[in-house]
Length: 126
Image 1: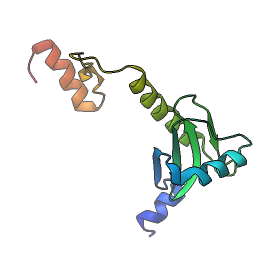
Image 2 (image 1 turned 135 degrees about the vertical axis):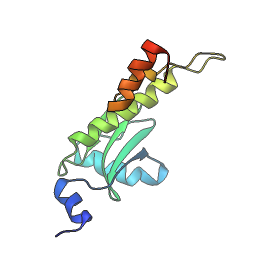
Image 3 (image 1 turned 180 degrees about the vertical axis):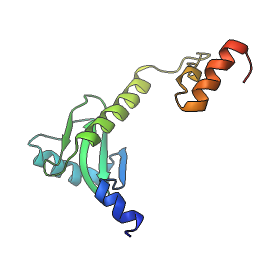
Image 4 (image 1 turned 120 degrees about the vertical axis):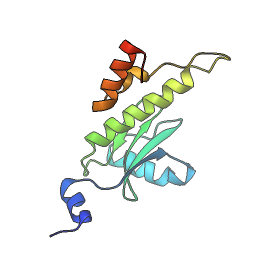
């Protein structure tokens, strides 16, 4: 019987990190951009790493992404796009004093929580 780590590798569930690129990452970003025949965009950049290896990056401002063409990165690019859009939206709309925060209670989507959310709206009981 194989251990959990072997199962993760077989399923492609390696550790993934998505983070803001810093000044220490300039060489890695240039390497990724060169591999993808593009240039590193100006402004803040998010990068995705598998283990400690940078494999994809995206501009938070323009949405331009680039990646190592020798590594499957479609899912990572989608995660980067999602996170970049979240960061971009949060900087586009400055918080107004006294602004109401959205009510996300209807977003409960898992089994019992969904049932409880639906029944509490009907009965007023949680």
